[in-house]
Length: 314
Image 1 (tube, rainbow, N blue to C red):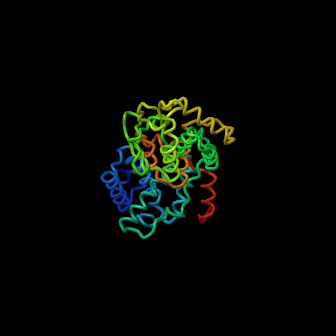
Image 2 (cartoon, rainbow, N blue to C red):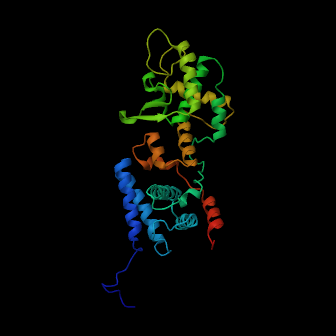
């Protein structure tokens, strides 16, 4: 067999369609300038989107708006067939969502083909992840007018609502709570601060504790920390761990529950609900999106079921 000449080079992968390439560059420029994403994050999005564009090059998908939901589901099945890791498949879907939402916002296409694709089903093999019913039971176990129960309810609501580390929660000062209880300022690793919104239930639990429970725990000496012990001193990490465990026992949860489990659950439930990976990274205070990806998994059976449902040759 004759070897290819210089005029006929061997191509390891299809050429990136020019229109797709231009659209990808526009998205990345927007994310770089307006969202300030890190270089590694942008590189990951580029790899995902260029891989999809090359896959679609021979499938009449050279135009940025040519793909439909069935094409995207087919692509996820293709990645799975190649043996891609679940986190890789999930991140590819996140990248595609960003791409098509951008095209819709720019008026390049009328509808987002990724909008019809269900968010990935997350497998619960990550240690310490509670399901929503277990979280509800855990929070409901801290009821009553006792100041310690009011404190514990506020602490648990805060941990689940914000994904805070226990050190960030027990270190929270009164000045770190926005006046209307809608946002808290958490001091994370490396002395970095971040603002995290509070949901309605967490707001109410904090409001009740600060107005009723905390004044009964506080002593003469002014203590800036929000969460106090029985003696009026700042609550320690060890004491907070014990209180979380006691709440789990009252709720009838047999699995080991510790403060970080609520952080795991916060991230897992956010992503299961369709939250953007980048947004969850910011809320958790992760320096790298790779750290956040530990919470991202794809249910292979779900992908195969969607593929069978939508693909004409499945």
